[in-house]
Amino acid sequence: MRCPRCRRPLHESRISGQGGIYRSVLIPVLRCAGCQLVAADMSAIAQLRGVEGVRLRETPLCREVKPLRQTCGACPASLAQLTLSWDERWAEVEECGACGLFYLDPGELEGVAEMMIEAAGVIADSDLERSE
Figure 1 (tube, one colour):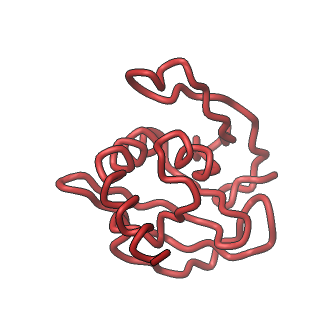
Figure 2 (cartoon, rainbow, N blue to C red):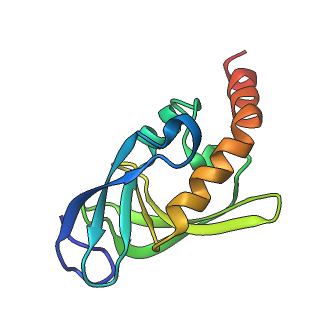
């Protein structure tokens, strides 16, 4: 797999699940040694946070989706830029609509995970409404 920004190889890594009972959980990610971009499968993080089966673009966290001309480093699909926000926090991440990988700048993964924790109840409620 290659970085969608600088086309260098992505290397496997693991990061802490952050805080509380998640501290001992290691989340698999891919890192670019060049531009430091991090690629993560958000479904693993979503399961960890109790919002399994929900894509970020379908949640109250997603404020805007913009198509990009960049292609995913794992598959030939195009990326989309998602603007996420919750309370006073926000982040812009790139998502592959085909394989589900998210590309984040260094430090954004922790912020996105924190937004997911804070919004977990709202996300779970909106997911229940859709299934009714």
